[in-house]
Each structure stands twice: as structure tokens, then as C-alpha cells.
Image 1: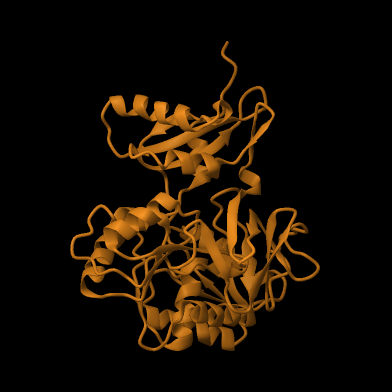
Image 2 (image 1 turned 30 degrees about the vertical axis):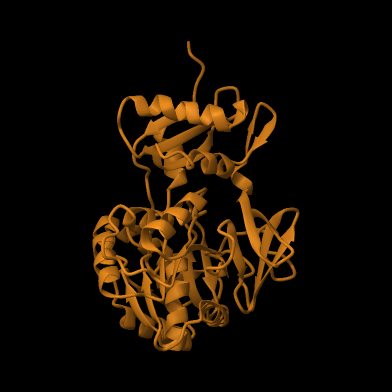
Length: 388
């Protein structure tokens, strides 16, 4: 039976650091509890970890923004390799000032936090469960301090842009958790006078790549020290020391390779300079009228319109079995004429089979970290049925 120690969400940073380090030294499984997790679910996860295969390390729930969540346990060696690599890639040292705006009980926030611990950097953690309360505190801190690094999901940076008076520009702002639109990077640089670039990672292996300020905006950067990325049939495969070889108590032959790699499910490529780029998720591909459509490509075009703040494009099943492309849109303006003007923008910039149907014209559902909850989007509007 495994010994499981639970790190509840909301622990002060130094206490969380000491808690995790002690658990890893003792050879236990430490489970950082994500925000919004119900007590019953926490008990179920703890019971599964205690009674599953022998293991030690840090347990994470995969985000489940597309599909069901799964448990993964990453070893102390794997976590230490990530921390050292991230610290080196970000150029962190004892005098660095880092603001983390995602929960450190999630993989992205955890990886950045442990990198700060690695070098003793000064760290502020803003992971209040209510993201709008979190935003108030983030703005207050950015008015007081000029941070070397600020990390968050795109929604956080987009929200900060609505009120940028007296904000001190960070040396580097780093968005992760989902694809970062180029238009957001450009608006951030104009509004805050500092670069916004992309981090790429996943719960199974932690932070994988980090883009530098001088890298092209569309790039996710280069792998951090101690991590390498291959491309197999257009899919990114990640290698890091002592990678997990399976999900906890769940068989998944496809995800983990015999060579120790983790298949990410993300389509991408490497350019001649060694920079990586994302093309979209394998499981998000929508076939419309026999033609392949990547929702991320459509979202990029939609976001070029000043009429909207955010959007998410997904495939919705129909009674015929073939999916249709639908968009959930958060408008910048709620004037009645805005929707019509937005349709004109789509028709002018997208091929006919790539034009989605607008099924919601309001704010988007989010996970606790602020990412768009794409699973929830599919439940907002049920599959279309044949009219009787």
C-alpha cells in the first residue's frame, strides 16, 4: 500500500514547498489538490493512489479539457529535472522576482514554482480559487513590482489588458495551458510594453518548451534543459529523465512509448532553427464535408476581428454522424449589429467549409486555472437531431 500525503489547495508557498520536498524525501506520493475538487472526489483519488501499484512522486490529474481526466504520478527525479531545466531556460536566480498566477497544485504552476524553489527566486503565488479576485491582486502586485517573469493562462493576460494603468512591464510574460493567439501577444506588447510568449507543457511530463522574448510569436520555443522533443507522424513526443511509463491504474499503450517518450496528442513541427510550433490537437480535428479543419486555425482568424474578445471552435455531432463546426464567442461589444458584422468578417477570411455556426454569444466556461473548458462547451449545446 502506498503512503499518500495530501497538499490542499491554498497552502502558502513556503509551506507547500516544504510539504512537497519532505514527502518526496520520504518516498511517498504527494497529491496537490486542484481548486474546486469536491471532498468526495479527493477521497476517491486518495484511495486509488493508496491501493494502486507501488509508486512514489507527485500525482497530478490531467486537465480533462478535452476528454476524461486521468491520474499520473511523476517521480522525484522527473520533477527535479523539470525544475532545473525551467530555471535555466528562464534565467532565474536568487534575485529574480516571479509572479505565478495559476494554481501551483496544477502542473504548469507547479513546474514554475519548483523552478523558483530550485534557485531560491522570490516568488508570489496568486492562485485564489475565484479568478476575478485573483485578477485584482495580480494588478495590485504588478503596480508595486517589476517582475522578471509573470506566468498565467491567456485569459489572465487578456483580462489584465482591460486596465493597464501604472502597470510595471515584466521582463517576460509567459502564457501556457492553451494556445496563445498572436493578436493577444501583439496587444500585450502595445498595452504593457513588454513581451508575451508561450510556454508549452502537459500534466504527464510538466513544462516542455519555453519561448524567449526574441522568438517569433507563433513559436512555443525550444525544449528546456534536460528535455527533448521528437516529431512522429506530425505528433510531438516528449522525452525527459525518468518519464512516467503509464497512467496510474489505467492502461494506455498509445501514450507512452517503449523508448521512454510521451506522445502529447499535439500536432506540430520543428523549424531549421530548432524552434517548435503547434498546429493543433489530434483529437480536435473536425472533418467537414470530407475536408479536414483544425479548430485552432479557425480561431486564429476569428480572433483577428476587433469585434470579439475570445472564441473557441469545436466540432459538434449531428444526427447524420458527421460533425459540424460551431463557435462559442465572447464579443467585445454587445450591440445588435455586431453579430452580423462578425459573420461578414468570417466570410471574407475563411473558406466556406471553415465558417462555423455561432452557437453562443457570451463568456466562455473555464477551468479553475482559467483555461477554456472545452468539454463544458460540448454540453452547452447538445448534438443536433433530425427535425420531426
